[in-house]
Amino acid sequence: MPVTVVVGTQWGDEGKAKIIDLLAGEHSHVVRYQGGHNAGHTVVVGDERYALQLVPSGVLYDHVTPVIGNGVVVDMPTLFGEIDTLEARGISCKRLRVSTLAHLIFPWHQRQDAISEAMRGDSKLGTTLKGIGPAYADKVRRIGVRAGEVRDRERFRTMVKERAVQENSVFASLGAELLDVDAVVAQSDALATRLLPYLDDTVNLLHAALTDDAAILLEGAQATFLDIDHGTYPYVTSSNPTAGGACAGSGLGPRDITRVVGIAKAYTTRVGSGPFPTEVHGELGDRIVDIGHEFGTVTGRRRRPGWLDLVMLRHAVRVNSLSDIALTKLDVLDEFDTIRVCVGYRLNGQVLQVFPDDAEVLARVECVYEDIAGWKQSLRHCRTESQLPAQVQRLLTLVESQTGVPVSVVGVGPERDDVVVRRVAS
Image (cartoon, rainbow, N blue to C red; front, side, top):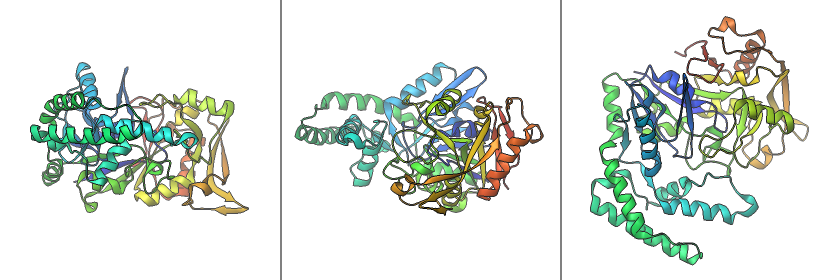
């Protein structure tokens, strides 16, 4: 049965949750495979808006088993705050499963994050300060604490205390405020009690589901160009949001995957520092931000706006082996006179057709644009391809011709049903 991966193709905030929500109805399991509570997914259902950070978007369907995979780093206070909010709104989280192999985030990780970012001075990365990077660093250093450790409570308390004491010695050497070790242990122990019922061997859970002909959807946080290996390093996240990370972060094998859907906005945004070739400043940029409500779900920070970049998208197709593209938020551009699309880069008089492997080079390129006349009408009523204006059709044709991949879904508004499904990849 099908395993579908949904991955962001830009710098995040492409509207992945909306497409995941659209696809989740056809799947029995929705799995988050990397990242942490630094990612925000927003789903609009009627008058209800759900802002999710750790709980997979599929929780909104009664038939879906939402899974937090082994590749995720879990902040327990955030997880249970999110569960409590959803339960209070009538959304049951009893089906949620959390991998015993997922690593946990603790207060020292957030303290490390803040100290590290402060020490960078003017070279700040723009991290969300959620402790994500330090938690992944501990995982790689093999000193992290995994969720499954809470099953042995005495051992868990000992591990937390030892790690807190170790980190206090580092904080002391830096002249930083020390952790209250006893308070950290007590809080972690109380949260462990709540975590126990959700724990599962999710790798074998998912393989058993495949054996029973289940359909599984794997959702990534962040996006291709925030990938620790393939993004605009060092302005990246600490994990692998790309499709390859879906296997490592879920325990499913590459041959299990049958479809990889890349999500791209009809324009581009990024949060924090780093090069951005198509960035738009001034009144035009402010207009995109205001109409698109381009403020972070988690941080509230204003996103940097820019035009659609097909050099990026072509690279995302290669890195992720995309089978099809979902192009979202076209409605944000409804009233623009001209829609600009970057189809190439120019550097020192030479046109580049591929995405540079050096962020400093990327910062110096000039964009080669193709302009499309704006459609100057609302797309919210469109539900079939024939209802899309000719200018939109031209934009879709340009995307497909430049990337070699079909556009299967077109987002024409914020709500669950505001989509045009053009074709489904086989």
